[in-house]
Every structure is written in structure tokens, then in C-alpha cells.
Length: 383
Image (spheres, rainbow, N blue to C red):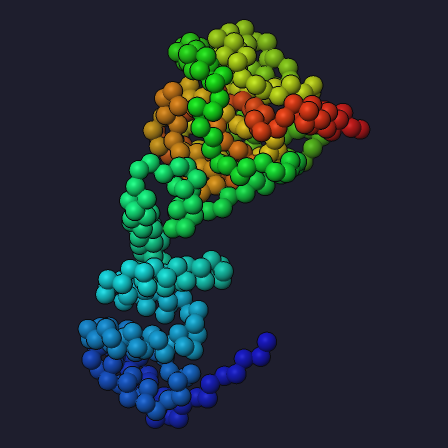
């Protein structure tokens, strides 16, 4: 696409412009403003550095004049990131929260679209994120107060989407998609009655982990290469920082670990894990050492949910699923759809261990579970 270049100013105008910019560079705002206003009267609007004039006027404390200069720039280049951020800052200064938010958001959207940011704008960019987070939170609390009572999870979700605190997070399994399932990040543990007897066995499972940790370390890296397949493009490949100790693996009991941890194996017997020859159940302790980050990724299937029962909790350990982040807390299972983008992070000083296993999505009926089991088993058997 051809771009029309503005004509260069005559030599005298160019000199005046350079003097004005030099004055701005040494923060002589009154002289800079005087010179730049003089040149603005002579130059075509498209050739005028309106952002420089806005900076000079702001330095003189003339905020209305600064905003007028910004408006001239935005009339020429409506997506100029610097002008949008500067305009938002002035609207924020005047207490116009809604206008400031709209200009900050437009600037951040443009930065995301362009994929780059000038280093000089980084402080304003970071401030914009913080400002929007604070204003979105205030707006959310305002709307909830107007509703009153105890809004349903769906209403809270809707308000979160409205205020930008949530996103519409969709299932994007890497291998197999089953249509028609609700797009839910986390599921409430009260929806699964079989969790009650499992949680009753939590002290026994914790004791088994403590005994295991006191002896030989049986954990192996979670991400490993398969000899006849390309190595996974995962930074935690063969890294014990994300470790696993299997009780069920590809539908088979791991005898040594099961014998060492009978309470854990018995607890898993309460869970409705898929039974697919050569494929599932799968259940293991998942260990995350301090400083470990499991990068954002999607699971292979949306026909299952992943369950975490915290065995050993630690501070500053988080699980993000879509736009919602939770921490592992004692006695509180986390059940989530791993076909939605998710990541985990241990930013604390101690390791975290959960009992991880998969269950069927409860909405899938028995007939389709049987059909899906045949499909997955057939995929494994296909030569």
C-alpha cells in the first residue's frame, strides 16, 4: 500500500520545529510550547508533531491544551498508541473513569494487535493494565451490589465477562472433540458425591506420601520421550521438577506403587474413572517442585475431567484454567476441564503433590461412554 508523505516544511519552519523539540528535550516546557504552537499555525496538520505539543502543554500545566493537541493527533491517526495512552492518562487525571478506561483499553488492544511496544511507553502500558484491573473490579462490585443477595454462578460469570475479568474460554482439545458439552473451567466438588469417601481417606493418603518421601524417591519426570515418536516440544522434557508416581497407567495397575500405597489405591476405587483397555484408568501423584512452571497447554480430550486431590499443599502454587486461577488448599479438590487452556505454577518455597486422575464428563450418557471407549481403544489398536 502506498503512503502519501506530508510535504517538508520550509527551512525556517524546520529550524523553528527543531528548536521547539530541543527545548522539549531539556524540559523547557514554556519555550517548547511557545515554539511548537507557533509552528502549528504554519504547518499542515499532518506534518505537525502533535504529541510533542501535548507533552509541552502538559509540562506547563495546561492540560486542556494538551488534550486538544492529542485530539488533533487522534483525528489523523485514531490508533496511535502513544496518543491513546496519553489521552487516557489525562482523562484519568480528571476523574473520568469510563473515558479513561475506554482509551486505555483501546491502546492495549492496539498493542496486542501490533505485537510490539516502544520501551518508552512501557510504564504507561503497565499502568493501563493495573488501572483497568482496578476499575473492572470496582464496576463488578457495583453491579453485584445492585443485584443484591447471592447471585448465581452464571450471573457472576456474566458480570465477569462484561467487566473483562473473565474471558469466553472454549474447549480446544488437541486430539478429540465431543460436541455439545458445557464450556466450564472448574466444577464444584459438591456435584460429585463419590468424593466424600475419597476425602475421608485423605489422612491415610497423606501418611503414605510422607512414608514414600522419607524413603527412595520413586518419582519420575512427567514429560518423557517415547522411543518411536518425536520428542515432545516441552521445556520440562525429562525434568524431574514436574514429577509423577503412577498407580494406574494406561489401564494397568502399577503393582509396586499400589502395594506401597493401599489407601491411595482404595480411594481411587471410588472415582468413576474411564475403563478403556490399553488406555485408562490413569492415576498418579503429580509433584511440582519450587520454581516450576507448566506452560499453557490444552489436554487431548474434552470427554473427561481432571481431578486433583491435594495431598501436600504449598504456598504460592496456582492452577489457571482459562481466565480463572485457583490455589490448591487442604481438603479442597480441584476438578477442571483440561481441554481449556491451562497452566500451573509453583512460585513458592516448597513442593506440591496432588493425586491426579481423570473421570468421565458427567453429561455423557452410558451409551456414548461405551461408544467413546470403543473409539479410543480402536485408536490405540490401529496399525
